[in-house]
Image 1: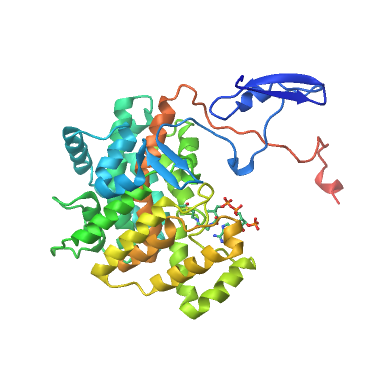
Image 2: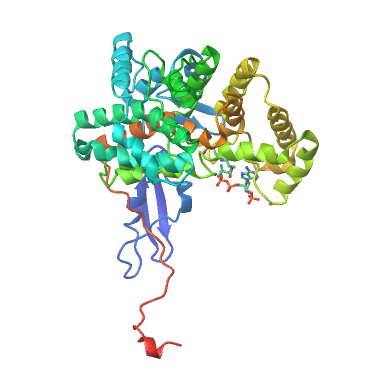
Length: 428
Ligand code: ACO
């Protein structure tokens, strides 16, 4: 059976054979199909790119029907249970699990780059009195690039690697600085001898001048959450990263753009929205009425549904387990019962069943963050910190791909045809 698609253009009665590769045809091949004096040929119309592959990638695999997520071929369940965020970061960036020596040298690179330039703290003084940490983080990533002008040289693998280490290493400090400045507190710079997740908790929570040791269970829980959030193939923010990066902008600018994309409540902002929703529902007896209001189109059940997963998001399953372990240390978050009841009712309700809406990674993660005493407006920031790894892995892959060109989609123009300019005095 030939791997081709035959298309007959009924306007011209001409037939075209297009090669099929990996279940896709090349949209550019459609441009051969022309009728009349059409100069550009046939294209596809795909708002939101729901059925268009915009790149080839070897990083993350998702099967949304079966609820499968793998980084570089390794199941997310095994990585969450057996590896660490630093190991996963190397895996995503370099393609293979690290050896002992590779992991050591990667950790050293992250450690050595973990302190942001001192002047960057002043960025936060130029923002609003109590800026949302995501807005502050977008500004901070953009500003960080000004300290490393060599970053413009995106053609050098060596230069790229240095920037990757800097961005991944400094993201926790910038995030913690953003949180502290919102609370009107002075920043706490990174410490020695703490893990990646532990250091973030330290910078977020420590009182300057006092000892702070993160609880090992909470530190490990946060590390696993970082593993789960490290990459998720071609989502909105990763597409922003690739799209901005395709103009050969430096990676700080591209990461700022990706962070901005993540901020929205339909993407990374959902974990914050879930918590606010659970507070609004308030008690178990209000759950049925809330579900009815969602079904009536008065709002969405935040933390439910996914463009790709049409079954249980495998990350949500792991997050639910971690929640139990965290609550043993922190005490049960009273909102958990409301979340569980929302899930129980939704999973039996025709509206959600028919649309194949299941909890996504954000449904339970906010409950853990809240139990850890992390402010709600920091939740999306906690997503951004590990996702810098995925963004940068995808950026590196894009720049190495000989097929990469600047992103520039077509449009279907529906505006006015050519018109003569009308002088002001003659306008109605
Ligand atoms: N609550 C209620 N109804 C929903 C929900 C929801 N959470 N999600 C989708 N639907 C309904 C839509 O109203 C639509 O119904 P219709 O066919 O009657 O019009 C149908 O399901 C399909 O929804 P779409 O918006 O077309 O699905 P899409 O793939 O574009 O959206 C998205 C996916 C944005 C994640 C959506 O499910 C949503 O808004 N969820 C809530 C926000 C959220 O949790 N986002 C986090 C996603 S995971 C992440 O980014 C980390």
